[in-house]
Image (tube, rainbow, N blue to C red; front, side):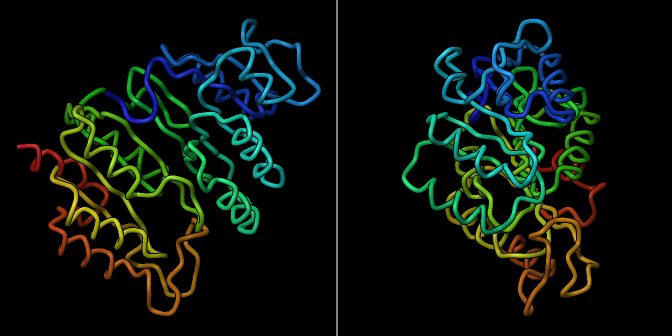
Length: 291
């Protein structure tokens, strides 16, 4: 059982007529059996993408006409929060927001609107989600993935790809890979994904990739200590980052002595998470815990 997405998931692409939306919609279509059933672009309704994917003016219309379950958002940052809210109003099961640079205040509004709703948000500022050989929603290179027993959760898109490539090279497949995003306010947390992987019978081990900034990794380690029985391999990026300087992601900043790599690694070890000292060790550590 795949978590959140599988071969039956019907996907619409918001911003499908933009350069990024068009490129990645084509890549998702090429990653069969992913079902891209609709595009959304205001004032372009009635047109077609790739000769057979209908484009609609609104998410609501796209859902009504195609029975889509999920949307993926490639809308520019100033309008991305509105795009999320539009999908939320349409009561989709899943929203994946790729967009980087959404103002934090906009995400405060989104988080408030999502309270009590059944819709799951992944992102923003994330690579998306993939269940290998079933469904790809996002920008990850599909060809490096291999179906198998390891769930991957990461704040970093690049390190997600690095971990997946190592696993596949070692002939270790993945159940589902989720890039949760590197912004201070995101939809799906480490704990949300850990809880799902712990319940998923097809996931036998978990890779969790964090980074400096915030306390989400410490909270996840505490959750693992009490609620996760499957082996977990962890890595924390940014151990050499100077305090007070943002490194890559908007959420990756050490402030007031909190959010350091050292504190996160200590929390991992206390929770009996197997820690990979460098990114190149992730694959071999997973191989060890699977034995």
